[in-house]
Image (cartoon, rainbow, N blue to C red; front, side, top):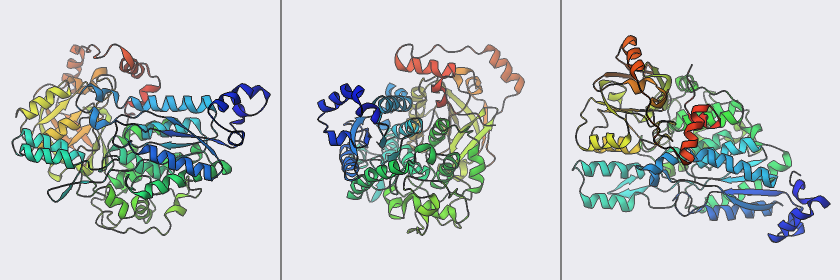
Length: 557
């Protein structure tokens, strides 16, 4: 066993003395050592139940003959970090999580791992770590929150952000805002819509790294505890069969994830995370893969904020496997891929039934014949940009309007709430990219302000930052190259006409090449917003092309 390096032989007597200090018995040291990587904490609602998940996993490992040993991973709550300097730290934690988990697993020579993430960045961070470490690994998340209920309707966190906007616009009373505040997030778990956390937990199932229900069983269900026990037992089976993450997370598995992403209508952040995971397994991922897959993959789900259904509804309809079974009716999946069940994708979804065609549309009756995400290119985004097409209303799929330009999120929000943005405008928020932010903040506050002001079907928003899965409307993010490196978004001037054509995958600034070249000559790089600490080091990594640079959107060919 791998752990023999620290438990067997006379030379390892000092190591064993330290295991003795931990209270481990000789019998435990003779069993496989299974690292339980748990991101439990008391600040993230999606993680407050992970101690219970970890205990269940440990029971499962022990029942199957292993010795479970827990160590932590960090996690940030994007909702609490939203709208202030904390959001600059959210995305960059993904690489911190991957790096620190790699360090812990390698330093202590675990034979196998069970990863217990839940919210936005620690799911992909731990998937990246699993690929690097490459010992038998199973994922089990903490599960989604139940939807809130306000005035007879299901609600979620995005409803809360939009309620703030509506209150600022004078269309919602303070009393109603307070009711929203107290009811939209009623339980522990990852926020109840198809936001980034739930997107990535569902895609973990598709990648083959989580058991059925990993992405959809609600956090408060006892079924989630049973799933955790099974994950602990299953990792011992994988260890016996020597099935490792790189046997599972192949190029074909990544393409399966992108396909199901399109059907589910996942967060645009998946277009940051799937390339990073692909990078770790040696796959050259280009974001315009998305358009080729989207062309042949119908959008089958409109989960909040794109529609009125929630994760609990998807779970009752049959979950991720039911979506995959629908897609497989047209042969859209690589069914030969191995998974942590010890079976192939095809074997896993055989006989799975779609129990609710209102939640998961049948393959021959989709919401749209194309997928939930699209990559737009043009002179404003020569390396590509990303939009959650499934969350854009029909009247905004093609839009043309004057640019209203802001160099940070705060200035844009002030203008929106101050009534300075009107129907037809295109809000441009720049210098919020990986280097320019630094840290690539989410733009949920601006999109929510637009929706709250009643402009969601008439105003577009373009940024070199990124969008939350909770964002809806014509929100185009990840614009690359970003403003901080002289991308065309840095050259947009107030009133420039911007043309958006999502069906034709185009985003165009109506300015001549000659004029853009002239503006580029006169462009002056901005001074860094952060000069010390981790954010400064991260921004330097992006610039130098080191591993942190994979946070940038890959170029579209």
